[in-house]
Length: 419
Image (cartoon, rainbow, N blue to C red; front, top):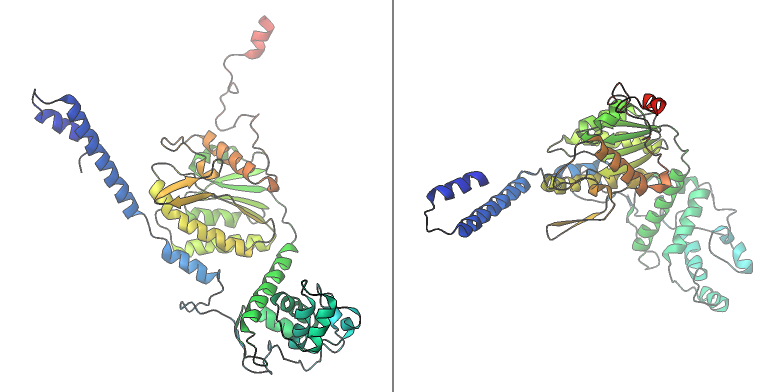
């Protein structure tokens, strides 16, 4: 593959006096464009395929609720008989629902004496609650349907009943905590309840997880900024406004940095660009971040700003970055994690939202100075107002880059005295 200069030299040597210079320039431009297209194709071809590592992350951290066998089988309970825990007709030996009434079911208005009817079991309560939870029927119609023993199952009613069973019966608490989903449940009175049960069960599991995450105490500590290479002077200068900067160029460096930040309250992570990384290193990084969230810490994830030179590699990395963010969101409670990326790939073209951190660099000519890192941080700070990130102190000069005269030309005090 010839360089543009070499191509132009070859053409200029071979051209005779009768050749139009305009045609020569046009030919050179065409050759240059063709060489550029080949360079782009080679960059895309050389980009690392992160698919296997992404699948490994999804399996390891059970993002979609699948087991570790690699065959995509959903993990959950297979219920075959009434004596199995989790069966809708199951009755525990301790008779936990002995004193439970229908009126104890939250969110379902039972009129008068209906609220004092015994709970009996989950199936019995579900049948009745599915009638009285409906808002499109009058009280008279609901009572008539109940007396006729009508069956009109509602998923929302089953959610409320499962939550009551979780709070009242230890067997039901054990069953709900110990299973991820409902795989199989036999028919009851010739009614297929499996799909209703599966949806309601997952909703209850999600509600319980959100409640547990919301109850986490807030982790208090300084702010760590895992930044790209342009922030090297910020790192040398020390903390600014309570923000400690550390340059990370690889996932190994990111893993080691996060391992050192155990006392930090908030992590701002600019996910690094790396041509190839070990899957184990990435998994360890995610595990450290998961522990930070479980301890009440907060995380802001940022995608490295894109440039023309890194476009093909950036698009390849976006698959891994998205998987990492999806994994962390699974373990985060309310207001614990903010993902700042906002972009879309359509017909091979990358579209970025104005103001998102991915745009915080000069696209065609990268500026490597410290101002680029400051601008990126300010972009992030404006992107997550709910975290109330501090401003970087800009009034004082940086110790590592300040001259003996404090960055001033001449003696300003002497000039004032002479004036």
